[in-house]
Image (cartoon, rainbow, N blue to C red):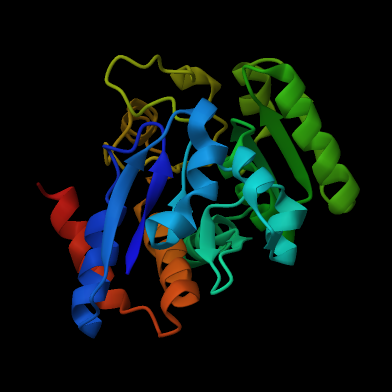
Length: 274
């Protein structure tokens, strides 16, 4: 059985180690691969999954929204979010999508016991859609969104306002405005921070007093944003636990067995310490 991760880029990912360890744990004849696919070739690649004998894939940046177009069906949650990060190939060769990012982020936020009542998101792509839905479901009353593409942030804010009217969602045009509004929780869902040369989007004096700073990026384990915030005395977290929990949800949908959490966590820890 073949599984894998579809993204552009994918070399940074720890998903293969996590899933391959789980396959070994159950003695399965299965493997997890990394598929680097540019946006122009995404739909063609996804439609070829049955022919390639691939039983399921995860989807990462920048494909989580575009991948919806290749599906024959999806879960209600994925439809509401408008993005998928997990796809199963059915016995008939159809593609069925899920959003396990939302579940993974929600579980980790709950474990951290963060006050999510007033939150802000940097980024408005597929990861942001999942995080926004998770925050609204956890009781966020005020959500502010920033993206360099103002049309994307405005569209996400409008979508959230329709689906979660109790969560007042607005888009802003600068990160400074976002920080001013995000009193309790600031989440970076963008890929900015994955490269050493990436700019620091947030000035230290913009961070709201007492806010929790969360970055969905896990490689590197401490982005420039998290390092700066920690140095300023803020509570911080990267997205490694979100990765684990969404991966466990994906594994269970593909394999139909409980995900071996301890095994998968240990595999991720080994990757983190390389």
